[in-house]
Length: 231
Ligand code: CDP
Image 1: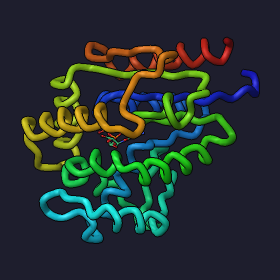
Image 2 (image 1 turned 30 degrees about the vertical axis):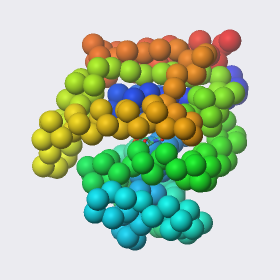
Image 3 (image 1 turned 180 degrees about the vertical axis):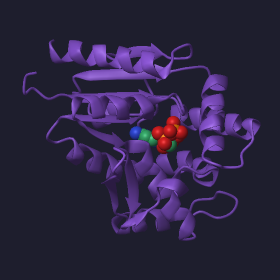
Image 4 (image 1 turned 45 degrees about the vertical axis):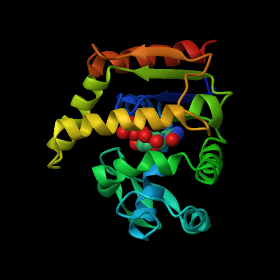
């Protein structure tokens, strides 16, 4: 293999399986994997835990903006090859995946100052290339120069079913209708916000993985990687 390293941007709708495929590809090709959604989730958790979001979901915007410099996000590699999200040094990987955070993350991610702060961090993580990053605006805003851009979609019901199974398997008590409602609501907020809305980059390759197994999508992505590397 050549020493050439590229940037791979994987964007798409909530629970579309982006993270699973991004993580698997990064491990296989020896690239760094960054889950940009985990960063938005960590900021949301910080806001929830510090009274910046009330029980009705209202955000105290000035408080959120002034808290941003006190929020540090790191990723800690785990022995099993995954990585955990650290918020100011504390492992919050489990908490950020819970519905309490999912229910509040899209309004937080719509705040311009939050996006600017996290986009800067994401760009610096990718400054040496050799990175796979997944999210909503990686191919459009964070790395418009990425050599490979993928846009993933699947039906909302299929995505909700996957997320429901993933959470139930972890022991979370959730009901399918609630998960589906969250997926649909986040899609809507993510697509209609003013700042970097969820949008397919013009030069992205589409993937609808509704009918694909994980092995099939991993194989498909690896093939796209080799093509991009040789372009
Ligand atoms: O894994 P899932 O698809 O549920 O979502 P995620 O990737 O963890 O992202 C959580 C939320 O963060 C999304 O619904 C978006 O509101 C926001 N997000 C964003 O605005 N921009 C990104 N690059 C990544 C996530």
